[in-house]
Image (cartoon, rainbow, N blue to C red; front, side):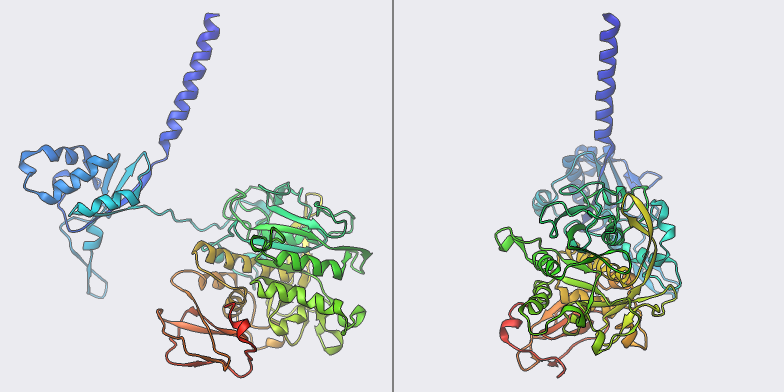
Length: 555
């Protein structure tokens, strides 16, 4: 009995000690800004830290009573009780006010000398404390030290080396550079309109719904809430989901473009599986899709539930890795065809980026072989993506022609497949999710900056950041460059929306920003800070027609 009680008490002590130790292991770091230079020589230790006990005790030191600045600082630190205090630049002597550049110019370092870094075990309410500091003539401000993410490359996912199109092939999308800015935000939603996604895959979170990577969706074929593939030949949606959002940094499998900077589900974009399968199997051995279900899924995906009584998904990006020739079933005068188009138009005016594959029948898409929905790109309603090989040249099977928006990798050596497996994926069906994934990263970055952005803005950022070519017929605005797209989506670059009048003249160009590039759209003028400055009146080119003030009102 005695030994059992002793063991229990010892076990309890271990638990209490462990909890206490872990609770104190996380230190909070703050930066304190002084209004003027203060000498701390008397309290500075050899390693650049201050003897905070002696500093605080100086409040009662008669010899320091006349040093008002020092007393202001000491009283402040007595209040917050720091664990440690150090100089901002620890090995810089405090009496140095200037350093010399390699060109011989003087550089003022007093700003650095007015900063102190402190550590505490408890969090500080900086807003309340800064209000109190208004009466302190020496301590100006306290700020929580910022945590800066390190470059998230290489990841610990073992098969990332089998995905050279992300980072190492002769042409690649420069994903490591993009991840320096954002690897995906959980507030951004991507819809995959396809065969359905095998959400039991470990690298996709092995689950469905709240708390999982595949956050939701619908089976439009069977009209139920389980959008997982039913037929063994439904093998098209799961690889796309892996390209878009395989979970990163989980020591498992592959990486996804917008899969997050950690293995936590709170990191990375949400994916919605919208199953629109047809029972017929195509020549490629994969189930075809049903156009009426596609229209329904796109329409619902683009609808914002917060303003439509809970109807819709309110996604930011829709991936459409499919297409059909106009001569197959289309009745140009039918309400069905018009409604099919209007579903994509509905997404466009709801600021959703819709990305569609250009097709794999090879060569120029002529008037007789126009493929939809990719050809809706002529009205900017969708982005039409052709495919390029690992050297950046148009893939022999890829379609191209008027209206191509961008080109992206036609191949990916490794991605998720059904039944918890992995394999390659090819076609413009592969190209589209590359662009959709980077679109989600751009949306993510602007969300993280708390800056509004339209779907049209995302399109233009991707086009302006693309690797240029001399052949827009095949490559559109160029080859997808995720790194550059995220670069111009990040500080110090800014997005500015300017409203145009119906005569295509922008008069509201009073410009609070320097260095603007103008982005022209059918319904207005937008800008991203980059290299040129807009002054005076700007005219939208005649090739764009502003139809009604109603369309302008949404900008």
